[in-house]
Image 1: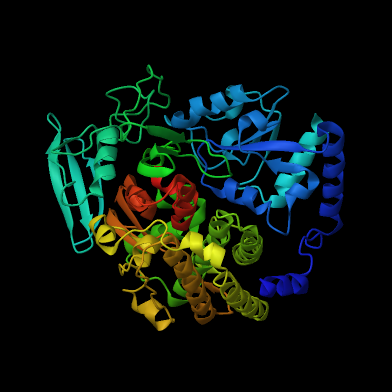
Image 2: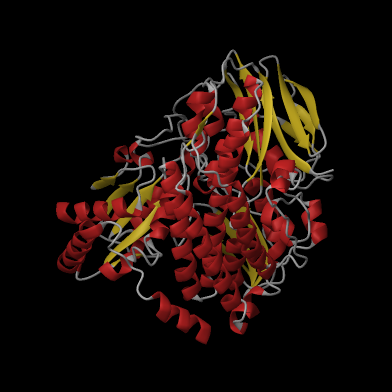
Length: 168
Length: 457
């Protein structure tokens, strides 16, 4: 274990603002501030995959890597819709996921919001409407905010969450 | 003989069932008025999902089949509706009444059922796991997927290969490069031109980068599922670095749209110095992680798949190689042999074997990347006219052997079929659970890290 702690000291702090320069720093500061004011310091997100390629999920996982470290801003992913303020929906809403998605929304406590993640749920991606697809999601649930991209990069997701916080 | 895939095709006057083995391809025509075929289940258990899928998509019955429950379409899907038949052209389906799905369960005194999913606690794709439990012990598990079925096979019919490209790249985000490579191979096959070596090397380099991202993510998540979070922090940093390089080379963090006839020039100095850093980082990771007894205790002897079972169930990819079965599409290729590919096999088939195999494969992938690296830009000639026909292609994705078959008629896709390595591997995962407790399931699942999107289509 000593090996690890030696390495840990050598590596120092990785969480970086360098890549996106001052821009991400200001995003982070603002997110932290808004989360503190609007959600008493913690904004709980629930991720729902309604038929994605796993790209959006991978980018959400990347938000917890040492470079982005979203949790330090008070935003974190929770295990149940009953703990969530917001559901983050990715994917094209397949017919097999449709009822499960509506269930999730029903299980959430008010006040609750829906954010769509990536081009698929807004039907702006490459997938075409066919028998298996029920997107766009706004026909089925009230969508407060949309984060565009295929998939949106971690930085775009952070920006999107900030825009959402500004909106409500 | 290894079973690879079984799929059907609607030829208007008859159905055709195509069965692909590693050494040959068989085709049977099936009368449309009484569509019945003999099941291959007792010879090749892996054929089960393939046959259930064919039934759901085409309405073809399989005689002497062990399992005739619906697979890809779920409780509210209308009866007698077969979307892959050519006569099906609907853009919208009305839901029918809820028909419960009969799960395969173990029953008895004190035995209870645990349902997990389709929506999971973490940031994971949607799929369902149904456990029969005796206390903590898993007696049986049924995996039920296809929640994410987007109807991609039907969506691609009638499109040119060029139009299909962006969709194929997004079938499974984890394996996008592999999917694009299969399609690219089919494009070149249909033009009767060889893929230029420069392009081949660049594409293989991207494929190895994708493998490194995927393996590193797993190398972090497997220890994380035992509660050892610092490994995830360490590996997710490395996989993020790799993804950023993928973006630097292709303009996209997942390489969507990266496989074309153009190779960009590469900043070879910066790339090589990053590779050196990676080598050191992996070396450190290995020496550190494999010396933590409490972690190894969770990995060793958990989720065992024997070599016999892996062979019987036609396993591919990491799962097969960790159980000592030598299947890797790169092994048969002279191109890969020349560039330093070596196949690693493990014997035990447990989580530890799959974990250490991933470390070995990352190291070999970095060696391959070094050997494949070329600085200059390159552009292949125009492909010219593409000839109609049926083309098949294989590619070793980060999960395992990917198989794609496309039939082109009058310049557009008549039938698109792809078999993700996950499609066969999901079917044998329940075999790994028999000696373990339910808390080991996330660990076993992550050690296999199969794709839901690729298998669901």
